[in-house]
Image (spheres, helix red, strand yellow):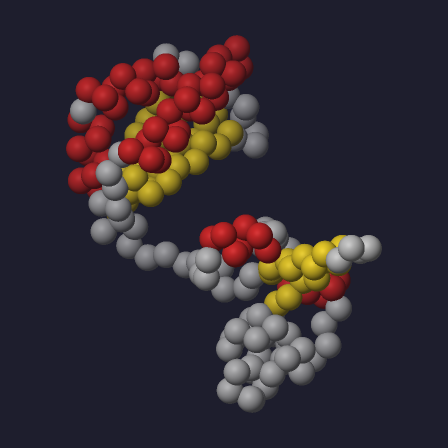
Length: 177
């Protein structure tokens, strides 16, 4: 079962740059070389600039515990810990997860004279809005419009404004969801 590790820490304003530099030095070492590590984030509070949150996700809690117990871990995180005045560690097992079901992707088409950017919103069957689903039947889109409805660029953007738009090149590099 995957695990989420959460560190709530305080970093005084005068140590902020040292803290971020230390995080930058170790982040790729951890992501590329620690068994079971799936990813991490460092976040700063929107209301208290000295409050920070570091989260990491692990394939299993045992993977994190094994790494945390090692001398390599202590040496690697020492520069970050030296910047903290408080630290609290919490460990969670991920029981359920919900992921976004509506995405907005961009496709860029370039010609010698112009570059055009378009947005598509996919239906349940995977066909862009305005085209028939692969079954030949009209399927409702995840945004609530049927595949035969015309949707303007402004409407498509308002379907899910909190979803980040990913450039087509990045989506291709990432591969299918």
